[in-house]
Amino acid sequence: MRLRELAGITTPEPRMLVLTPWDANTLHPIEKAIQKANLGLNPAIDKKVIRLVFPELSAERRQEFIKIVRKMAEDGRVAIRHVRRDAMEQLKKEAKSGGVGEDAEKHAEKELQKLTDEYIAKVDRHLEHKEKEILTV
Image (tube, rainbow, N blue to C red):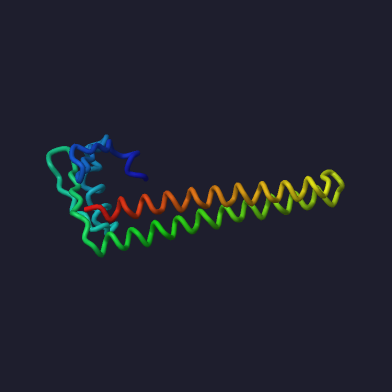
């Protein structure tokens, strides 16, 4: 089961999560599951809640996060290109069937490329912003 189905999750401090299980009997199984997940967190049971304190990010860990973010951005760019390819194929099918004229097809291809470039630029801007945010100490 997902954690949010078993417990309420609050953030009393920026680097701390407090988990309040709906059923008190699930307190220890939740603790063991967090330890087994190997997330680098040490859950602490305090009466009926579990406290998770996140350590400060080291330079190495920040670089790992940047690699992950770059991979996600590249996956986003690839997805945008796949949508462009599918749209181009659909446009070519319409042109072959006579539903779209040659001039309209060329105009639509240019518009599609312009939209693709615009959304890839948005992904790049978000990536740049997120990298700065991760590197901020």
